[in-house]
Length: 119
Image (tube, rainbow, N blue to C red; front, top):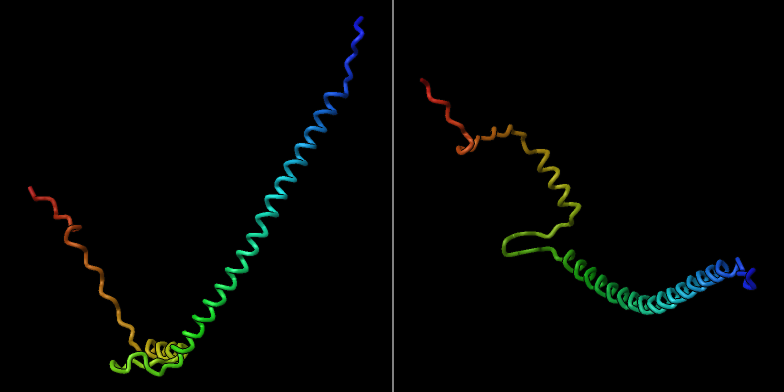
């Protein structure tokens, strides 16, 4: 008989411990990368929010100025009216417009097939 008796639990235990340590190391690496990126992303988001807020306020101010103008083009006689009023006027105009039947679509000459020749 042999003096060497292998221990049956040793390879399985080593494999389990190795796998757990591998997962732990991978998780730690991911945590560090994500945490490092999160700090720079948060700072970039704050700067982006501030920039977009500034642009938004400028657009709103410009829009308010444009809405306050009584004329779009005074030389051509185009008045500036509120959108709600323009929509009301358009609806009234469309209600008063008579409904006419449309003309039938004429076939294109290239699609007309000549009749077959008579014998």
